[in-house]
Every structure is written in structure tokens, then in C-alpha cells.
Image (cartoon, rainbow, N blue to C red; front, top):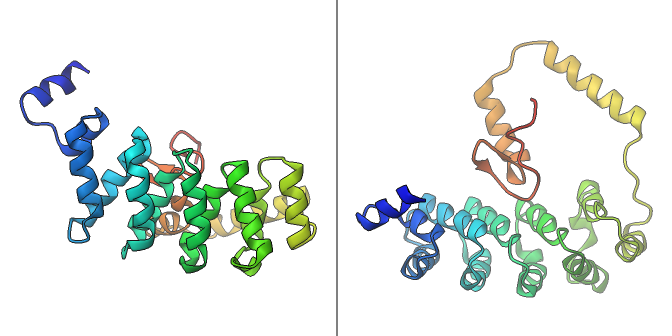
Length: 224
């Protein structure tokens, strides 16, 4: 804390650091950068991620606008992940409204965000029942994600829309693990290709060494 304060007093603090400190001027500046299509994409994503960590209420509306306006999919993905931190009814209302317009990848992230709170999950499910959102937009894994938090009201609607949703049996999961283990032992892998594969799938929800989303658990400390 003393180091951060000293850097700030010396005028050397970068915008993300000032934003983390809650500096009002930094919030204003960061929101302008986030909304600027001509600003550096990497910087915009970085600031969006910080807003997801510091939970600045003023950021909710600009972030929601960015979901619709962003031309960069990674930026939209970062924004979806950041919005999960905000317990604001506008988040669910906006994501449900925009859901049919989102790409398949963004829809998957949006489902993860909406599944994080019961009220949001119900809003999503009601839109599916009413028709604006096509139930075919949900792969089996996405439907199961809605059921991760045990709730009879949610489960009832899911059954009504998709029928009985069951997971894999222990035997099926063991067979899958054995199949993957056989593939892994069959030859050597390329870590660079592996990282790209991870970021394109798992990394959208899970964080690993400061990279990836924040919807699922951070995998950095897990044995790999």
C-alpha cells in the first residue's frame, strides 16, 4: 500500500492502478477509454477486467452498452466476465435482450453469467419459454450449467423446456478419462498449440496464470 501511494504521489501510477485505488478521475478516464472504439483493444480489455474486480457501480451502464457495441469478440468476452461481479438487475435484462444477437461463444459466456444468480437464471428461462430465445441455442452442457445450483423452480422449468437432463454416469466418465489418457500417452504434445486450445475453450470461463475469464474457478493452483 505504501509503495502504491508513493508511486501515485510521484505521478507515475498507471491508469489501471489508479482505477484500483478508486480515484474518481481515473474512473472517468477509464470509462472514456472503454467506450472509445479507436482506443487500443488490449488497454480496453485490461480496464474492463479491472472494472470486474473493483466493482465500480458507475461502470455497469457503459459495460452493458459495450456488450452490444463491441466489434471485438475478446473485448465482449471480457465485458461479459466482468459483469458477473455486479449484482444489478440491468445485467440480466440486457443479456437476455441481446442474447439472440450474440455469437455462439458469447452466448455460452452469457449463459454462465446468467446462471450465477437464481433471479437471472429464471429471467433467461422465461425468455426461452416465451420464445425470444430459441431453446436450440443451448447445447446439453449449457442446459446442465443452469442446474448447477440446486433449485426446484429452475429445475421444473428446465424439465418443461428440455425434458429430463441427466449427466454422464460414473462408468461413462471413467471411460472418457481412459480414452483421453490413452491419447495423451500416445505421443508428445505441443504446449503452444495446447495453450491456444485452452484459451479458445476452457479459458473463456477459467483463469490460469492471470489469463482467461472469471466465470468458473481459477485453475492456477490446481494440479495439472
